[in-house]
Image (cartoon, rainbow, N blue to C red; front, side, top):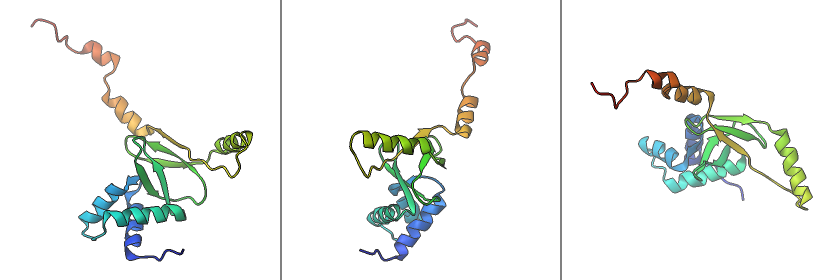
Amino acid sequence: MVQRNTWQRDRVREALGDAGGFVSAQDLHRVLRDENTGIGLATVYRALATLATSGEADQLQSPDGEAIYRACSTAGHHHHLICRSCGKAVEIEADEVESWAQRTASAYGFTQAEHVVDIFGMCAECTARGAAAAPTAADAASAPDPDARV
């Protein structure tokens, strides 16, 4: 069945592109609601599902198990590195993963195998911010002793 393009789906596609990273359907709906578009949450979910099926959006599960979406910038199968802190995502090629997935499926007699591999971690910027905020051993050594009598 061919899906017709609607202004609502076009607006969801545009908002997803503006988001710049992975977002949940609820977060995207909140943006659209704040713009008084009149687009309901169910419509956002349907539009995102259609965009993911057509390859116009990436869909994955966050570490918390929530479906999150991003406007897709690469056609075809690919993988992501995703920052758990800021949501920054980098599309990566993973030839080793592709080979491993096919070998593993074949070893167990599976055909037409598909897989999803997304790597969650901390991007360099968030790691640097976290390191800058964390006290160093030198900072701890020079801090006043809370048990000392004044």
